[in-house]
Image (cartoon, rainbow, N blue to C red; front, side, top):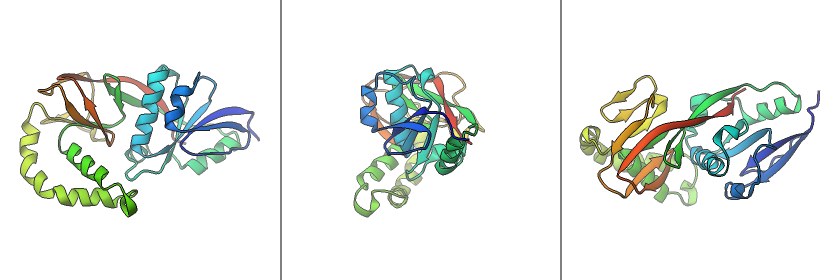
Length: 235
């Protein structure tokens, strides 16, 4: 059975889906949207960083609870969000849309430090050095794929072996990785954000990693908290 005409917003890739009106835009065009309520679904193409930036732009412009169910089309190097929530492939989801089958969703929590959000990872520990070197290597044949991350790991191996014990006991360093949800805290590594986490970074200019993106936080005292959730289509 063909679906009735519904609206889909696609971010970063052009889609044509039978029975649907698809509006194709880039992440940078999200602020130009007048409303989000007209869309039944949002397709996000990209890696973890693109997903985070898309949701951040939505949150900056609209209430986070008004964001339509999100369909992921992963094209990143790691795609941690997809590996963690394990949705079916985009092709299978589109097939269900065309045949008007019900789609299953789950609530994926969103966390934030002020207006800077993340879905699974934030920190100012060894992860920052790893992401920085990986970004320096984002060119030519290394632009996409896992190779640049592997090179970064090899380059930083001596550094990590020496400095990690000191990073773990530092009160000004931390790492949150919610896929490690089987534990709450190990030294300054957090697997869950059950309640607000207060951290004194020690200075007012700090480079933090958010879901694989690097961003500057100009605050000494930060609060990591859950700020809502998104509906993620998984099947």
